[in-house]
Length: 381
Image 1 (spheres, rainbow, N blue to C red):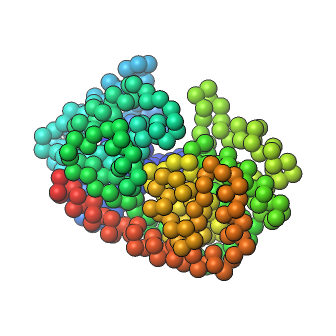
Image 2 (image 1 turned 90 degrees about the vertical axis):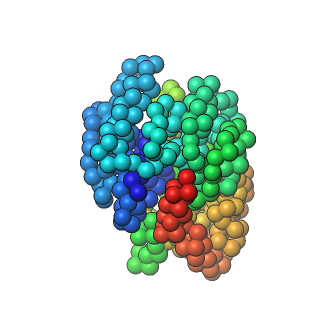
Image 3 (image 1 turned 90 degrees about the horizontal axis):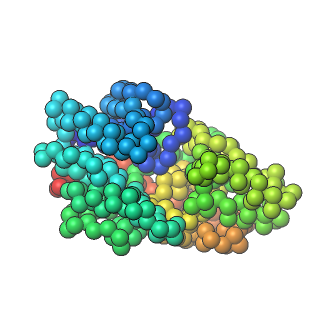
């Protein structure tokens, strides 16, 4: 098959990226290794120029962004449509896959089937963050859904909550989890574990529960004075351009008083380095207020690390409490602290849970199994 991803998020070396970019890079490489052709088309969010290159057999087209206030969407959509049409003429495309908003301005080619993968769209996160739906984005999402030939949801939760606002129009839909790259995320007994390190990874923003985690560290540090929280991930910015990390440093961390020095921002790191950081940490804590599935929890679980994850959203689909990890109430500073303290006080039980966590990931996030599910879904559509 020839699969074309329409996305602006395919990772570029040396630049930070999010979970969607990680997923597309991981699965694209696996498709190619299994004999399929993969193209990626999107606007270049990294540099102000066009780039066409082949990475691990994946042909990536990063188109130069048009920046005309109020008309960006039109010019960029036309450029993407034209590029996909040209690729299809040269090497016929079977499937175009895109996130929720992606098909809004697509000019469909009859021979191609169009799939939306639910990574968490505008309606979904508007509900999760208790904010109004933007009429323009809402319009695009509804228009996009009408054009889809099928849908893939990365969790039962995102499927059900998206359906509260948008219709799947009686088209085929299937739940298929994000795969975990087990060639990167595996136990590394050669790396020494720092007994005083708790790790957080992800975009540093409100919906990841970082505020509550930082405040929970005050109670943790009262009992374990040497314990420190290392925060890995890219910064997020408010509409006024202010850094979320600066906000945390000015408004949240000072509440820890003397313990403030135990909170350390490490910034984004390459995926292989992040795996090493998972390995050297005592436990990993991701108290997200909302996720569609989340990659960091199963990544750390694959490395046989004890993970504290959110009981909200799809958390219970990923972790069975005190069996494959720990679940916490991400809105409760005390509950996050209690979960961390339980882990620190129950080292042997924590190690057994971590072993079960890896088994769970091998059974449920194995890329070979999920690759087959995706291809079978494409063929069924």
